[in-house]
Amino acid sequence: MRLKAIIFDWTGTAVDFGSKCAQEAIQAAFQAEGVVVTEQYLSQCHDVPASKEISAILALTEVTAQWQASHGRLPDDRNAVEISQRTEQHLLDHLTQAATPTPWLVQTLQLLKQRGLKIGSSTDCTSRIMERLALLAAEKGFTPDFWVAADQVPQGRPWPWMIFKNLEYLQICPPALTVNVGDTIADVEAANNAGAWSVAVLESSRLVGRSQPALEALPAKNRKLILQQASHQLAQAGAHVVIKNLSELPAAMDQIEKRLLNGMLPPQLARHRKVEL
Image: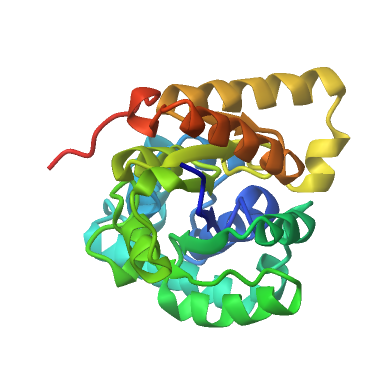
């Protein structure tokens, strides 16, 4: 058996290095409520599925204290919805920057298409954002055959429904002939829950959470430590291959294809947590 398709995550993987635009949108939404959400607070929630991230941030002791000081009461579910809506609007207003491809994406995409692979994609963004983001990204060279947003399936990651939606559209079966490329623990778990291969990207990841200039400005020792920590988290979540950036993706595909040719399937390698039903 040979690989037939690859599914890219969007922010933090294909576009928006470090998910910085997404993070800044969250920070701006909280700032409008008189609450300062630092990068440290965001990092405490980087392994939370995107659909629960706002609620997780609101539940942080420091954030709850700020909210109570500003509003005279504790935040509730209605506030989480309002902040999510404000976050979406802020991201819509800054989509041109968010659509910037991560390093090596366009070149790697060409190589993958030359191999005859179908190119899918999935995202935790809403379809409202994706309708515009996909057009902007296409102008900059990212043109997958298909995309699906989290609000187009019953549940987002780590549930596997967005991967299955891609496989249905691309007409790929079994899932083991597919590689899912992402930058978060939820991406990895979704791939494992779907029975697909998981490749995790480090440098542009949400776990690292830095812009490319900020990451490159770090002392080499610090940068290496940060990448090692993120790599460990992604491997523990069940990533079959962890790569520094997308320039290493073709080699990762070769590695996975050799496993397939040797009769190995993704579930035999996974160390993931199952979705709780």
